[in-house]
Length: 498
Image (cartoon, rainbow, N blue to C red):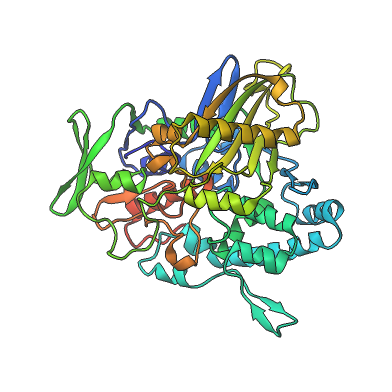
């Protein structure tokens, strides 16, 4: 196993239970991939994902790999409200967790009568897209004829009374303009899509499943930070006798008679294997083998196309969190078009103010005492920017503070110290190309939003984790582990869990 990310560990635990001897070689000194923790002076911060959706993926992993269920290993809590949103016009709304009726009522009260109904109707259509794609896109290995998923848009068309015909949106931006018909509702949808590093103007309409996942299955936090989930999965692997070798960088995948037969490490060590599973980004995997791993002309995620990363500011604050504070606040960009233009090009005289997410966990484990608070500010940014440019870093830091102070007045006066993290830090920790963060796989869009399959053209070599099917995000990484384990244990005829 190459890499100790969440997908790799999910596969490792399942394979060990099935009777395989599993050895994981990790380039860095720790497990978890992008799911990491920064600690200083009694403060602790998640530096990767801060929230979890679809915890059922990890519940299933723990059920299938041991007697202790997930809730015996970590404390899962629902975040309520799920999110607070501050819009450019000064309005705001708090959305309850996993309650369609509650969300509809909150929107009507905060944004005006009718807004809740339009959002509720959108969620019904998003559910239809979810039902159409859930199994082939998330629960099964990517079919050899994956082009079927690439061509057909699963998000349903909407009858248009004036035109006397059905109009089918092809992007989230068109859903906003044609169906939601309110800039604030559009911002709700587009911020969720943007949060995964996707441009709502070019992503397929099937991206509607992303906000649907949150509304239908809830938003969850792991007490002590999401890093605790990585710890629990790592410890489950150890209990199943998975071996971990840290500070061990794999440089080359060995082949014999047209099959992967092991790996070679940087220090020259050779480790033979019946199967090789790689939890690395496509650019790094390509450098480990001389042969093409996918068919010519494959339009799925291009390994060398720069994709967005995340800019994060970790704040150690004097003064307690206070009661009633939302765990997650989204401050929407004042000029979303400029934000998206810059995200795509990385070129602007001045970087525009981005959409900013503020995470304020109600968790005493993250601060030295109740007189202090741990806070994380983040934004999706272009990864192909010179993040060693101090002026660029300073401007983005100021942007994040400006947005956060709209939600939390007087924030700057409370700062004891701050730690700024750019896509370069993600690159250092995960080796992801330019520090990019993978998005979940999506149907339609000509296949450009699908990730490479878990199998490759080199027999015995498998891909797992966020850069392979079914894509990025904690739930999707866990799903990829289940798929790879099934393919190795049951063979290429494996078609997913029933």
